[in-house]
Length: 192
Image (cartoon, rainbow, N blue to C red):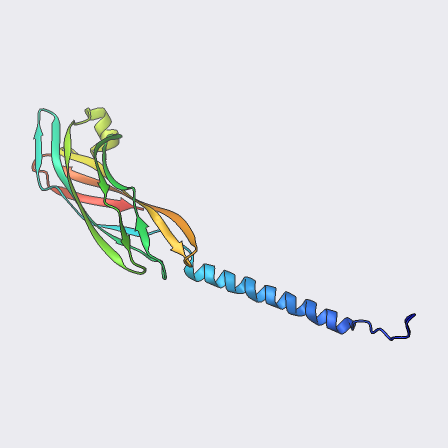
């Protein structure tokens, strides 16, 4: 009995234990739900596949070449619930370590789970062929063949669960073998 004559009950130790267990259970369920949402909706980079490379016009004279370069690619957005918004994307052509051609890819958006087909065609300025010692080490795998490298870079962002913006970048580089005789594409090999 207290000094005023009333009886005061102490909280039951079972009640405190059950509140602690319920709080721990709710925290565990919340963490599991957050992990599941992250695994299902985690931001992924777009997948780039180069489908074809063409050289519509080609000219070679006095140890220099110039041509028009066309690349056809498919860009797939593997994200399940969010669009990939791309900007500041580009395609560049490199020969013997120097950039010889460049093009910005217009900004756009690819819906969730969709694939967008892109074509880029531009003129490559005239450039001198590398001397034989550099060409054999860097740029020409065989006599009468010039090898250039195309680098396609897709930069953008993916919005996750409508609150978080995640920046992503995908790059694909292709080595393209071109005949100096007629400008035909002899083959290309791409790596992401």
